[in-house]
Image (tube, rainbow, N blue to C red; front, side):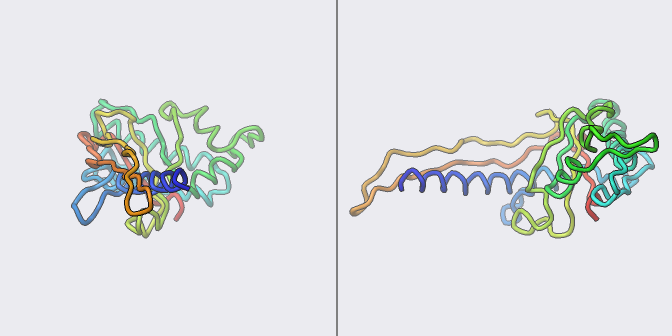
Length: 210
């Protein structure tokens, strides 16, 4: 029972850490990776060129060409806005978008690739993308409702120069303490929020699932 309680405590803390990493904390004024100041909106022409991402990736009927066009637009925004300092290499997807790309067959103007999912095709053909990750904190309505309108997609250079999560104290369990007739195991951790020294190394897109 004590081991299960400690496991639940660790899980709750890690879930809160995930929420803080994505969206920060409004009560303390912290922002997260997904809403940091000055990260590039891929649906806007304000930074990194005139092209914008426009497709719905989930309902595109597997047309990987539209999705690749959006990804190339996002990649160019990071590359252009950072003056070539950063080439984005990691695509981070919310649950519905990740599920769709992992299961839809790749359909292009040249034919249907039965052996490849859209996600496989992106990795195979994109000159930028090296990793495609799933992060449920980006789901619509996740993270305490801070992201209530859209499933948010992130594309970034995975580099501490661009962004990093500050954890001055990792999860730690203290020795058991006898209180009354019960043993209690105090646990603690400390989080300093997300640092984004170079926001132009990150772009986001909210239209991938409508």
